[in-house]
Image (cartoon, rainbow, N blue to C red; front, side, top):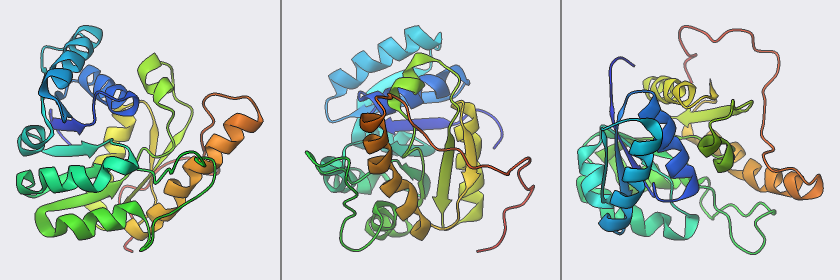
Length: 228
């Protein structure tokens, strides 16, 4: 990935979206915060711009932000997932769509409850069709770490059916302060999506705040990802 990118973060007024947008703004990218409320998006954009020192952070409604972005990142709760996709579908025109959604169903968020039909990321690709290239990522990163500015000792498992899309999102993970790893096609996103509930259980059991995952035994990343 070369040069600055226009990255739209839908749900950017929430903790995860805010944290990703903040780190990508600090990395020099142009950022659009998307929300159902353009006013809330503009307020969050102002805070991110001030915190990052960037003048290239703006706030828009979700559909406008999706139309503007080269890369669209979906950081909304599972309950709002399908409705948000329906809203932005006419705005998609071949972008990379990073879906961070985990199918948490309160109050039993520490129990894995995957939706019928398979992983959320697979569902997303089916819903958007050829309007976007979907990647699954950032499921297991604590939002509080992203907003804190701390070094993140956690891996990001990146899935996508297109290897080039995986490569791009892995680079974005690095710019957010994480190590991105190629985890294969979208069908494999069932694992990181399910892991979030397990990490919530671990946090509660051990009174931790930011449990994450780390893949051992990897010294260097390959220049070219393997074919699937």
